[in-house]
Length: 260
Image 1 (tube, rainbow, N blue to C red):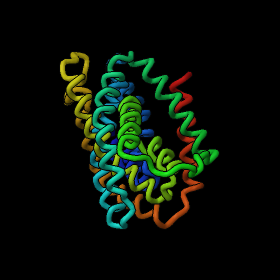
Image 2: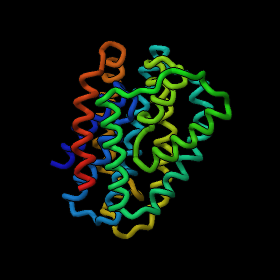
Image 3: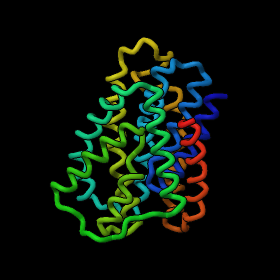
């Protein structure tokens, strides 16, 4: 029954990754926290386990999403390359930051983040395109900040990357596609860091590789890899306005439950 939940969660995460460029982590982490709580995982490690597992699954989600966006010529690879330089450093630092925070407090931080993103999505708040894309140093610095925050929240960076790129005058479809490409190094570097940091934790359940729970990773990755391409295709055909608001309502409920 738990593995079936992971399959369904992976399908939802894949569609979200392709459609919004958010990597799916913003919904994977809360659901994994609830699932691990029901399984009786130690409260001191379950939030970190959810974050690390989410990041590991985003590696697989990103590959298919990026391939579809690249096929449509929407990924701005020079931007991805320079942001990745900062992302690799920021993701490692973010993983260390998350590991230093107690599990219950990390849940509250993630809950606040989910509520903020829900409000932003529901009201469709977007920064106006008012500046040009920064140079190499600016992209590297932005990648570092986004990589650091993404590792803490267990996301692929799309919820931060897309607003940044649209503010820097990139068209929305290119911003989503480029954000999806940036999600791959964010997830890979962060997941590897969470594996290493959690390697010697005695409270982790069986089948854990550090702070990555392999059954959940396999189940989510299996369906997300297929559904990410479907989401990316929808992003080029449909207006996601209504879906965004429904997704925002779900996020608001999940984030609120973490704060109660």
